Length: 64
Image 1: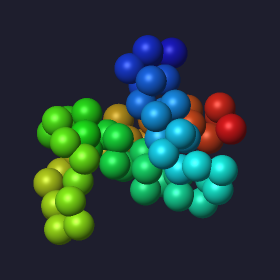
Image 2: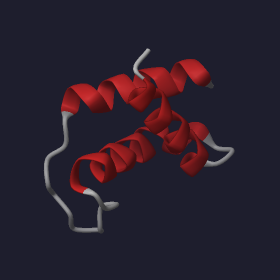
Image 3: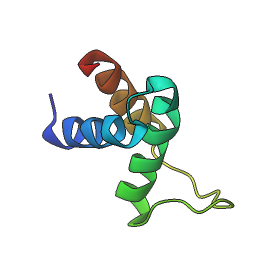
């Protein structure tokens, strides 16, 4: 498993807190930060790497 993906997945899990209902959103947020260098603002609509997002989400779900 790619260490970057595992790192991003772990960060998303930590951001989502005890409730894993926010996992999809936090995975998107960490991938956005990875790609653009900053967490998204409320109206930030810049694109992210969809394949990376899906892989981060998949690994995060496996971890939890």
